[in-house]
Length: 345
Image 1: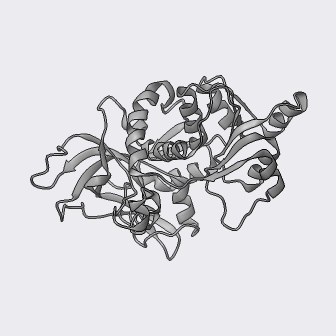
Image 2: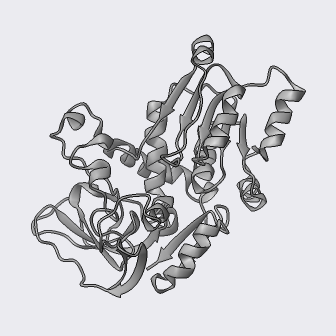
Image 3: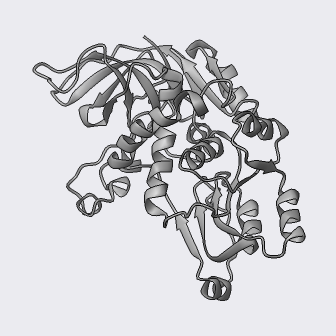
């Protein structure tokens, strides 16, 4: 089968022909991949900033069709449309017993399909049966592949305090994550949402979603406060990982506000926080990492609500590439020409 593997020594990816995976135990399923996504984490891996297994087939955003099930399996059928949650949980460790599956000692970031075990940048992918979720045949695979990032958003929503309708919400960054956050907030009924994005092309993408949100450069966000001194942000969601942008947002926070660091920041960079300001304003600083089994299940359901109204190739500025064109795909992703690059397998 066609596949794209990670070369850890040279920090590169290679297009190679690999054996089609076969079921070796009763808790495995083989999926024929239809669409696989490129994530920012994949770029971090190829830059040596995120650990991954040498020689692994990359790709942890996967949608496809069940190709093979173990004998006697009654939960799944060959031909069903599915998505794959890349993060397994052992259900036995200290964190799992507390329901914190994303911190699992034996799973979570320690075991991820497409990072530590072979993933979806291939024609076929094998996954643990607990990671496979059936989806409606009515949902196109290019939408379904966004279930994994969407599940991370659902996990963050589960961790956040209640976001009252009418709250001022600021989203920093309008890449695919910022676009998904914007869409989710809209479907939940939020209308006072502001998006900060320096790239004019990405600002246009937000406009194409027709959400009624104001997407501007940072100076325009600051101008809102200059015009109205009472303008403050109740919830700030950073999707950029840019510590400078996070730092700049802190003075805008309302009393009782929450700052959510969702984007993956450079581990060497820091932000400065006034302890007195956090005390005086009763601020909350929240971080979230990956997803949980529960949030992925919720994301599958939420996807049906988003579907064609919000998530299409055109609206989300997504671009398809073949596996054999992986170099062009990675280049297009790194330049930010499109908000999302996906492989059509």
